[in-house]
Length: 439
Image (cartoon, rainbow, N blue to C red; front, side, top):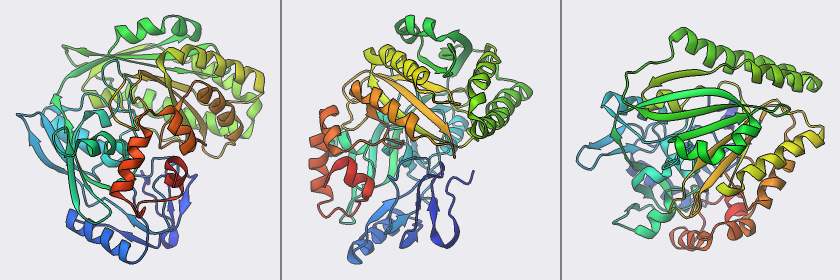
């Protein structure tokens, strides 16, 4: 997918195209020992170190002008433990490969996000999540972690060992060390019945609590400039499997969601005045559909249309107000928003810097087509999110800093204290971490 797109002469670009950097050197270790040696060497040479996965973050969280560690040789499943129902996987493994390998073994993760191009360590370190009543984030499914710390030693942590590291490192932002392996909880492969159907936004907001509690996984997309949404409910099913037919799948996912959608984005970027019309047409063109399949085929979908994204987690009870304010802002502003707003939920978890840390959360994501000016829209949206003490996704566009995070994360100080202990010389520092974690 070209997501690890390296340009000429060692220039690295992220997937969204909004971050470009030229590291002093790139290292592609083939083992944990080689990675540890690269970390020690960088420290001796006075260079900072960052690991970079598939570049799916829209922030510069993985950017460095020092040593850039590429994990593409650190891939594959190390171990499946059918007693404990866990899988241990190398950090550079793409989620797509993990999902496919698990399915062949008759296993699955409980929940996942909607994109599977990322590496397991990149996805978990930034708090990637799906939607769920009982489970949402990938990091919350971690049972153990292995990481190389600033002194080049290998540290393992779990609920039993190094608990204070485990509490923080599952969403570690790359600040505590370089993750080399992750042990996830898995379960026997199951089927999910998906029901997608259009619904007026007012009805979704009125019935939101009910829709969330009645379904294991509920999410919806609202089309700005319209009162229309598309809702998606995923619930476990006894079967039989009824996958989307290849033709329908191609039409819905490739042609409509990627092909026609891309054309509509190009048109909207060239002629913003037509955006509300496009939104009305595309939001009414959707029809209801139901299908039943194994989890990763239901949870995930290809994203070929490149975009830039901001996403905030607000307290779940603030969701309806947040969306009403967002809708009023778009109507007032004269902005032309050509991309649906995505809404998902997560239960509270016990990870220090997880966006759902200690509070039931709802996620609101705003997107703009790559190359379209997004600052005015994102700035106005961010004002609404922060008024509700929103917490931005670590891998998506935001302007918050350490001072703000100290207020919205009760365990922020615990994380920074651990970082002081594990990386006192800030070997894993970059501009982004300097801003979000402070000095």
